[in-house]
Length: 182
Image 1 (tube, helix red, strand yellow):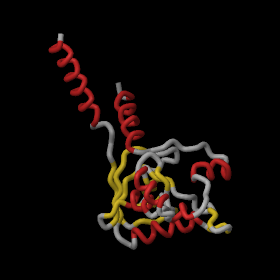
Image 2 (cartoon, helix red, strand yellow; image 1 turned 90 degrees about the vertical axis):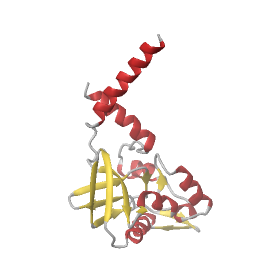
Image 3 (cartoon, one colour; image 1 turned 45 degrees about the horizontal axis):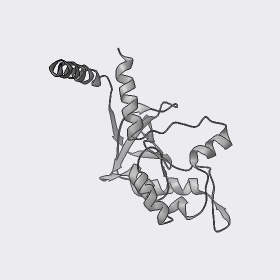
Image 4 (cartoon, one colour; image 1 turned 30 degrees about the horizontal axis):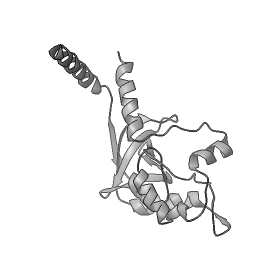
């Protein structure tokens, strides 16, 4: 009976591996146009940085009793991180706007992680430990008070809250994508 179960599991693993090639990973690189704190454009490819959520460009936050343009500062943080270097993004999922959900680097630096570490984006499925460090250091948006970007979008634009898109969400999406072809 143990051999039969092993054969079944092996067969399922072979089928799973055969279907993995249908999940198309896309890599794009070039000079980035920085749209806001978590989205860029490379050529014609619009990219939403996976696993993070930065304040919207027009979003304001509050620090020392005064409002400030945290969305603009989040974008400026990403501009500084990229600093004119070529950007490379890899991903396979798309968000509801058709943007590639990408893991992006510039000059060897993980831009997604760096935005969270700098305190200009919140963890959105990944980077929870980096967010905890930024929060404890009161870096970026953590220096004051703010609406979570997803909540701000919902209250200001009436948009449906987007689902998280971190590593665990990606694994679940990959499994669903594989079985969708059967």
